[in-house]
Image 1: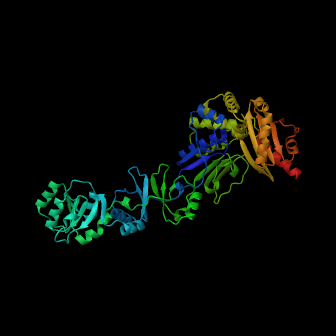
Image 2 (image 1 turned 90 degrees about the vertical axis):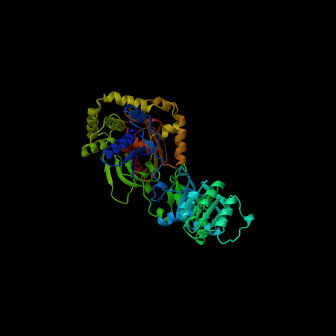
Image 3 (image 1 turned 60 degrees about the vertical axis):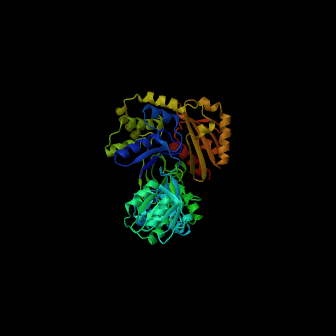
Length: 537
């Protein structure tokens, strides 16, 4: 199964780049992985992807268990033109309880169960036959004496035991079953019946075959006796005549397990067809398949908290986590590979993994890794920066040969431009929720060189912050407007205790106060808020 690799729900450059790079590394090591994003890719990340000509990761809406993840019974459908008998033999030979009936594009038309076959034979129109000549040849082990048609559709009459034929009973809609009663065969030919089935397997004189040809009457010879053929003939009808096509409960492969469980709870059928989004038949699902579903396999980068991850994460199988944040609330039922280092960027950890496995770093991937390091360390100005980050960046630039300062500033300028973005978009572009002691806290961080853009709309920002604070029932709602050049952040907030922010960052209580040196949410903001909360308890 393919492994999905993704960062947090507000993908920044470190999150996007580390997912791409880790996927490349693991694929080179023989795994099958795909990098994804859980939200809109930021301007800065788009700049990096375009600069190094990297493909954009696809959006992953969730990792919930879907029908496609269940080990349901994959099977091919049958044609509605199959005979009932051939369908029965197919089901018996393959121990199938139910089969799907499909058109020439494999799109589901209906379903048939063994019960449907039994009821169809018992309750069906016993003396009417609608099928192909080939079905009759196959089912009755017959041989064509003469034929001018591919299909038959008419009333079946057994005439082997008649001594004299009632002339009013035969016509062009009739299908006759008869033994070697030549006067009956001759008369049936003269009436131009659709089909004569001659039983017993005994060769008949050529003159009757010639006569059938002259009158355009199809005639076949079968080895079994009239009694047997009369019993089995209606089993040669098209399967479409007994298939169920109305009120079928079916599932598409994209539907979620929880939806399937709900539907199965209210229905009594044993098997349910599965289709793709175009109604192409894939197989059947039943209650046994939902007992032990196959979970999606995932690897997390740049986060390890449920609130920051994909919806349905608890339904997935987490194989590994690569992160540089504090230990969060994610738990697993078995041990996993958990790499957590106190460095400035997840990309730094991934770089050292390449070194550990002695795998060459492609040019594009080196660009992604370097960009993630520069972004998360704010060009090594963040207090989270370590020697490991700087060493990784220098080694990566030996591959790239960039002017790091110029590249970083161009990336920041492009990425921090707020032009054209709404206040909700700015607020949520890098927003995370935390539980600090007993305080439910929401923190948004905006890195920008365009500080005036925010303060020109300060009142609108405050209104939105107040709305989020009330709606989400936060104890603290904080927006950091981080000035990369000034190496500090302006603070806009709402708080249960008004003095928490001013005490934590040693600033005035004024909205928009500048906290010098505060640039890291992880290493500065969270610890300072925690310390202050514990002091006022």
